[in-house]
Image (cartoon, rainbow, N blue to C red; front, top):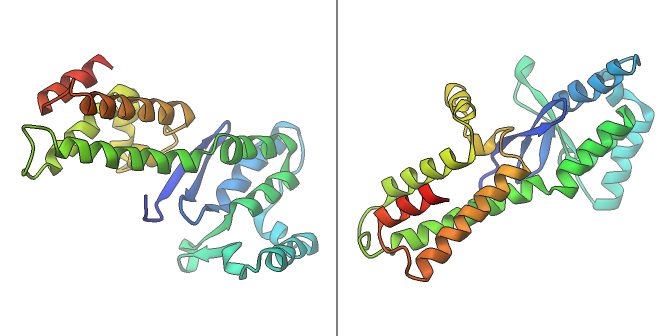
Length: 221
């Protein structure tokens, strides 16, 4: 995916909104989740505004600017205006915040962003679907046709094989692309990759030759 799409990433205690290309995530979400860990342990919550005023926080931001040659806005910045503005930060600063909030929250953040490589997997899934569309475009009964509608229908059929009906309906109601939602986790993304690669192989080997064949193959996945 080339555009910097806002995605919803699931964690054990909630979600964090993050832009997938710039990898800038909502600090409001980060502190909302992190404070849940503190409350469960009868510890005082930490306010985002107070945290950003800490000398140690300012020092860390400054050190990131020195080490990586970043401008401050590449580490932390406000998007929007007035009361609607949201403060976003890059993943490394998010990990720093999580570390300062709670050890277990830090582990969850690292597991999701680093170990599971969730943003990379979402990006790879988009690339796999582009490759699948290329092969769909060259099916015997679809050559030299406008196949945009077919791409959409195949996407819908794959989605219904991967997600639960209630999850799909919830995202529809909220006008949210399910692949940018909390339900697009490591399990569903791996399933998407597997199904798309199977279809590509079937088309390449000549076992699937038409649009109807593709639909039948998806039903059997």
